[in-house]
Image 1 (cartoon, rainbow, N blue to C red):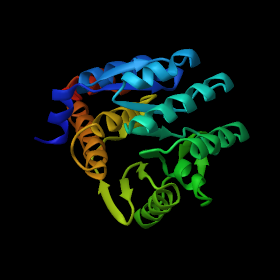
Image 2 (cartoon, rainbow, N blue to C red; image 1 turned 90 degrees about the vertical axis):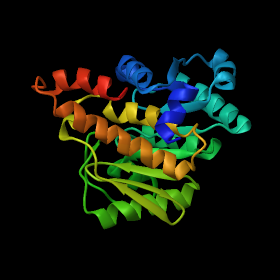
Image 3 (cartoon, rainbow, N blue to C red; image 1 turned 180 degrees about the vertical axis):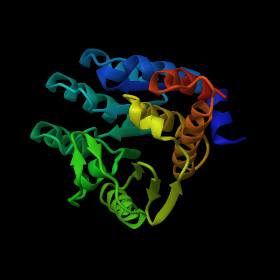
Image 4 (tube, rainbow, N blue to C red; image 1 turned 60 degrees about the horizontal axis):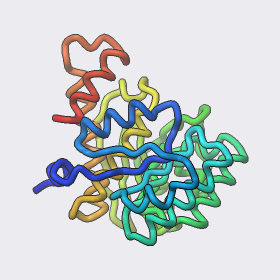
Amino acid sequence: MNVIEQVRNKQPLIHHLTNDVVVNFTANGLLSFGASPIMATELDEMEDMASIADGVLINIGTMTKPELEAMIVAGKTANRRGIPVILDPVGVAASRFRREVVQRLLDEVNFTVIKGNAGEMAHLVGIAWETKGVESIDDDISQLENVALQVAKKYDTIAVVTGEIDVVCEGENIKTNRTGHVLLTKVTGAGCLLGSVIAACLTSNTSKLDAAHEAVAFYGRAAEIAAEISDVNGSGTFLTHFVDALGM
Protein backbone atom coordinates (compact mmCIF):
# COMPACT_ATOMS: atom_id res chain seq x y z
CA MET A 1 0.00 0.00 0.00
CA ASN A 2 1.48 3.36 -0.99
CA VAL A 3 1.81 6.43 1.23
CA ILE A 4 -1.34 8.15 0.01
CA GLU A 5 -3.45 5.01 0.44
CA GLN A 6 -2.11 4.57 3.97
CA VAL A 7 -3.08 8.14 4.86
CA ARG A 8 -6.59 7.71 3.52
CA ASN A 9 -7.07 4.46 5.37
CA LYS A 10 -5.78 5.91 8.62
CA GLN A 11 -7.28 9.44 8.32
CA PRO A 12 -4.67 10.85 10.72
CA LEU A 13 -5.52 13.77 12.98
CA ILE A 14 -3.10 16.67 12.45
CA HIS A 15 -2.91 19.39 15.09
CA HIS A 16 -2.20 22.77 13.50
CA LEU A 17 -0.74 25.88 15.04
CA THR A 18 -0.72 27.77 11.81
CA ASN A 19 -1.11 30.94 9.80
CA ASP A 20 -4.44 32.72 10.47
CA VAL A 21 -4.69 33.68 6.80
CA VAL A 22 -4.86 30.07 5.65
CA VAL A 23 -6.76 28.17 8.34
CA ASN A 24 -9.88 27.51 6.25
CA PHE A 25 -7.95 26.62 3.08
CA THR A 26 -5.62 24.33 5.01
CA ALA A 27 -8.46 22.55 6.80
CA ASN A 28 -10.44 21.98 3.60
CA GLY A 29 -7.39 20.93 1.62
CA LEU A 30 -6.30 18.42 4.26
CA LEU A 31 -9.83 17.00 4.51
CA SER A 32 -9.91 16.56 0.75
CA PHE A 33 -6.55 14.82 0.87
CA GLY A 34 -7.87 12.32 3.38
CA ALA A 35 -6.68 13.47 6.81
CA SER A 36 -8.35 15.44 9.60
CA PRO A 37 -7.35 18.87 10.97
CA ILE A 38 -7.47 20.37 14.45
CA MET A 39 -6.96 24.14 14.51
CA ALA A 40 -6.27 25.03 18.16
CA THR A 41 -3.91 27.61 19.66
CA GLU A 42 -5.04 28.05 23.28
CA LEU A 43 -2.14 27.32 25.62
CA ASP A 44 -4.33 25.67 28.26
CA GLU A 45 -5.39 22.90 25.87
CA MET A 46 -2.15 22.37 23.98
CA GLU A 47 -1.04 19.25 25.81
CA ASP A 48 -4.49 17.69 25.46
CA MET A 49 -4.69 18.44 21.74
CA ALA A 50 -1.19 17.22 20.97
CA SER A 51 -1.91 14.10 23.03
CA ILE A 52 -4.74 13.00 20.76
CA ALA A 53 -3.14 14.01 17.46
CA ASP A 54 -1.18 11.83 15.05
CA GLY A 55 1.06 14.73 14.02
CA VAL A 56 1.70 18.40 14.82
CA LEU A 57 2.33 21.25 12.37
CA ILE A 58 3.89 24.51 13.59
CA ASN A 59 3.72 27.41 11.13
CA ILE A 60 4.84 30.90 12.24
CA GLY A 61 3.17 32.80 9.39
CA THR A 62 1.04 35.11 11.56
CA MET A 63 2.33 34.11 14.98
CA THR A 64 2.06 36.42 18.00
CA LYS A 65 4.05 36.21 21.24
CA PRO A 66 1.34 34.38 23.25
CA GLU A 67 1.22 31.62 20.63
CA LEU A 68 4.90 30.78 21.02
CA GLU A 69 4.41 29.07 24.37
CA ALA A 70 1.55 27.03 22.94
CA MET A 71 3.74 25.95 20.02
CA ILE A 72 6.48 24.82 22.39
CA VAL A 73 4.08 22.84 24.59
CA ALA A 74 2.52 21.16 21.54
CA GLY A 75 5.94 20.37 20.08
CA LYS A 76 7.33 18.95 23.32
CA THR A 77 4.22 16.85 23.85
CA ALA A 78 4.58 15.46 20.34
CA ASN A 79 8.25 14.70 21.00
CA ARG A 80 7.37 12.78 24.17
CA ARG A 81 4.77 10.77 22.25
CA GLY A 82 7.06 10.08 19.31
CA ILE A 83 4.71 11.56 16.70
CA PRO A 84 5.91 13.72 13.79
CA VAL A 85 6.38 17.47 14.26
CA ILE A 86 6.80 19.80 11.27
CA LEU A 87 8.16 23.35 11.33
CA ASP A 88 7.32 25.90 8.64
CA PRO A 89 9.52 28.94 9.45
CA VAL A 90 7.54 31.36 7.26
CA GLY A 91 9.46 34.57 6.55
CA VAL A 92 12.09 33.77 9.18
CA ALA A 93 14.59 36.17 7.62
CA ALA A 94 12.12 39.07 7.44
CA SER A 95 12.31 40.32 11.04
CA ARG A 96 14.22 39.96 14.31
CA PHE A 97 11.04 38.71 15.99
CA ARG A 98 10.70 35.82 13.55
CA ARG A 99 14.36 34.94 13.82
CA GLU A 100 14.19 34.82 17.62
CA VAL A 101 10.97 32.80 17.62
CA VAL A 102 12.33 30.18 15.23
CA GLN A 103 15.57 29.90 17.16
CA ARG A 104 13.68 29.21 20.38
CA LEU A 105 11.51 26.61 18.66
CA LEU A 106 14.59 24.90 17.27
CA ASP A 107 16.24 24.97 20.70
CA GLU A 108 13.27 23.40 22.51
CA VAL A 109 11.55 21.09 20.00
CA ASN A 110 12.96 18.26 17.87
CA PHE A 111 11.41 18.59 14.42
CA THR A 112 10.85 15.60 12.17
CA VAL A 113 10.70 17.89 9.14
CA ILE A 114 11.62 21.51 8.55
CA LYS A 115 9.96 22.81 5.39
CA GLY A 116 10.45 26.17 3.74
CA ASN A 117 11.42 27.99 0.60
CA ALA A 118 15.08 28.37 -0.29
CA GLY A 119 15.46 31.76 1.39
CA GLU A 120 13.93 30.59 4.66
CA MET A 121 15.95 27.40 4.75
CA ALA A 122 19.19 29.12 3.77
CA HIS A 123 18.74 31.57 6.64
CA LEU A 124 18.59 28.70 9.12
CA VAL A 125 22.15 27.71 8.21
CA GLY A 126 23.60 31.18 7.58
CA ILE A 127 23.68 31.03 3.79
CA ALA A 128 23.02 34.32 2.01
CA TRP A 129 19.96 34.16 -0.23
CA GLU A 130 17.96 36.76 -2.09
CA THR A 131 14.39 37.16 -0.82
CA LYS A 132 11.44 39.47 -1.45
CA GLY A 133 9.26 39.80 1.64
CA VAL A 134 8.61 36.23 2.77
CA GLU A 135 9.23 34.83 -0.72
CA SER A 136 12.45 33.29 -1.98
CA ILE A 137 14.19 33.92 -5.27
CA ASP A 138 15.44 30.44 -6.18
CA ASP A 139 18.81 29.61 -7.63
CA ASP A 140 20.30 26.49 -9.23
CA ILE A 141 19.74 22.92 -8.09
CA SER A 142 23.23 22.42 -6.65
CA GLN A 143 22.74 25.37 -4.33
CA LEU A 144 19.29 24.13 -3.31
CA GLU A 145 20.73 20.71 -2.52
CA ASN A 146 23.51 22.30 -0.48
CA VAL A 147 20.96 24.24 1.60
CA ALA A 148 18.91 21.09 2.19
CA LEU A 149 21.99 19.08 3.20
CA GLN A 150 23.13 21.71 5.67
CA VAL A 151 19.69 22.10 7.28
CA ALA A 152 19.26 18.33 7.56
CA LYS A 153 22.66 17.95 9.17
CA LYS A 154 22.53 20.92 11.53
CA TYR A 155 19.08 20.13 12.93
CA ASP A 156 19.11 16.34 12.54
CA THR A 157 15.90 16.56 10.54
CA ILE A 158 14.40 16.00 7.14
CA ALA A 159 14.79 19.21 5.17
CA VAL A 160 12.21 20.07 2.51
CA VAL A 161 13.25 23.00 0.34
CA THR A 162 10.32 24.05 -1.84
CA GLY A 163 10.30 25.90 -5.13
CA GLU A 164 10.18 25.23 -8.87
CA ILE A 165 12.34 22.24 -7.97
CA ASP A 166 11.74 20.73 -4.54
CA VAL A 167 14.59 19.12 -2.62
CA VAL A 168 14.00 16.62 0.19
CA CYS A 169 17.00 15.57 2.26
CA GLU A 170 17.75 13.31 5.21
CA GLY A 171 21.38 12.84 6.18
CA GLU A 172 23.26 12.51 2.90
CA ASN A 173 20.22 11.20 1.03
CA ILE A 174 18.62 13.64 -1.41
CA LYS A 175 15.46 13.33 -3.47
CA THR A 176 14.21 15.98 -5.89
CA ASN A 177 10.78 16.68 -7.29
CA ARG A 178 9.77 18.60 -10.40
CA THR A 179 5.99 18.24 -10.29
CA GLY A 180 3.93 21.36 -9.72
CA HIS A 181 2.49 24.37 -11.49
CA VAL A 182 3.16 28.10 -11.43
CA LEU A 183 -0.41 28.77 -10.27
CA LEU A 184 0.58 27.42 -6.85
CA THR A 185 2.64 30.57 -6.44
CA LYS A 186 -0.50 32.67 -6.99
CA VAL A 187 -2.46 31.06 -4.13
CA THR A 188 -1.96 32.32 -0.59
CA GLY A 189 -1.16 29.43 1.70
CA ALA A 190 -0.16 26.84 -0.89
CA GLY A 191 3.04 26.21 1.03
CA CYS A 192 1.21 26.13 4.35
CA LEU A 193 -1.17 23.42 3.13
CA LEU A 194 1.79 21.45 1.80
CA GLY A 195 3.12 21.34 5.35
CA SER A 196 -0.16 19.75 6.45
CA VAL A 197 0.00 17.15 3.68
CA ILE A 198 3.57 16.30 4.64
CA ALA A 199 2.51 15.92 8.27
CA ALA A 200 -0.24 13.50 7.25
CA CYS A 201 2.11 11.45 5.08
CA LEU A 202 4.65 11.17 7.90
CA THR A 203 2.09 9.12 9.85
CA SER A 204 2.38 6.30 7.28
CA ASN A 205 4.54 3.22 7.77
CA THR A 206 6.87 4.34 4.98
CA SER A 207 10.29 5.80 5.76
CA LYS A 208 10.05 9.45 6.74
CA LEU A 209 12.22 10.53 3.79
CA ASP A 210 10.09 8.65 1.27
CA ALA A 211 6.86 9.85 2.89
CA ALA A 212 7.93 13.50 2.73
CA HIS A 213 9.03 13.14 -0.89
CA GLU A 214 5.79 11.44 -1.90
CA ALA A 215 3.80 14.21 -0.20
CA VAL A 216 5.62 16.86 -2.19
CA ALA A 217 5.34 14.92 -5.47
CA PHE A 218 1.64 14.17 -5.00
CA TYR A 219 0.95 17.82 -4.15
CA GLY A 220 2.64 18.94 -7.34
CA ARG A 221 0.77 16.38 -9.43
CA ALA A 222 -2.53 17.59 -7.98
CA ALA A 223 -1.62 21.13 -9.05
CA GLU A 224 -0.84 19.94 -12.58
CA ILE A 225 -4.17 18.10 -12.81
CA ALA A 226 -6.11 21.12 -11.57
CA ALA A 227 -4.35 23.55 -13.90
CA GLU A 228 -5.26 21.47 -16.95
CA ILE A 229 -9.02 21.64 -16.32
CA SER A 230 -10.68 23.63 -19.07
CA ASP A 231 -12.52 26.18 -16.93
CA VAL A 232 -9.44 27.24 -14.97
CA ASN A 233 -8.90 30.89 -15.88
CA GLY A 234 -6.60 31.96 -13.06
CA SER A 235 -5.80 31.47 -9.41
CA GLY A 236 -9.42 31.66 -8.22
CA THR A 237 -10.77 28.89 -10.40
CA PHE A 238 -7.55 26.92 -9.96
CA LEU A 239 -7.95 26.96 -6.19
CA THR A 240 -11.28 25.13 -6.22
CA HIS A 241 -10.08 22.46 -8.64
CA PHE A 242 -6.82 22.06 -6.73
CA VAL A 243 -8.65 21.20 -3.51
CA ASP A 244 -10.68 18.65 -5.51
CA ALA A 245 -7.52 17.20 -7.07
CA LEU A 246 -5.99 16.60 -3.64
CA GLY A 247 -8.72 14.03 -3.10
CA MET A 248 -8.12 12.12 -6.33
